[in-house]
Length: 164
Image 1: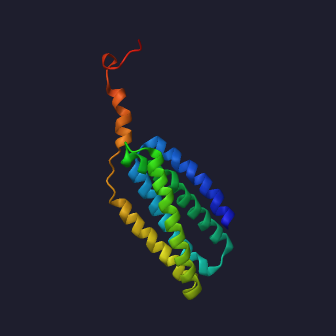
Image 2: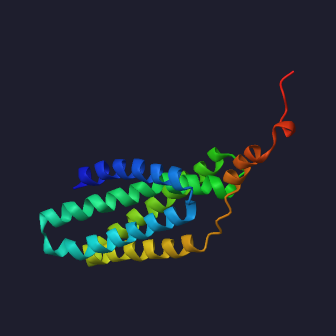
Image 3: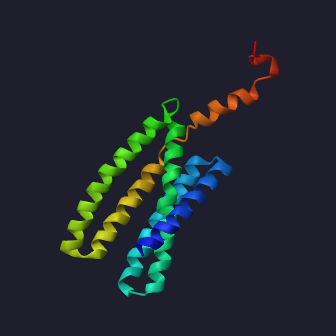
């Protein structure tokens, strides 16, 4: 199942990136994919106890598609709303926070798994995704980088500098 999540995640990253490039709807796309990740995790939690292998692989592929598909969207949205800060800076902070949260969630989920089982562990991850979706919904969509890139297109030829 892990391989299914990884492969569908690679496809999700490309598809979500292309969708974002075509629409430039940063917040809407990011929030939509986040919500679909949340729905995927909830569905995974519901399907897991039944043990139907085909259902598990299908849900795992959706989960991988949207969770990994979220990564390029998150990086691009962060670059948009933190502009003129360097993209590498916002990406660095996102990577660092992802590692910290990864450690916390891995340890917490592991403890829940040992003490209460997979359902409790998956529910806690689902609740975390719901909270993340709510927080994302409240992020102001101020596309500073996109606006800055549009300024030269608005300038007339006489406003542009000519080479010497």
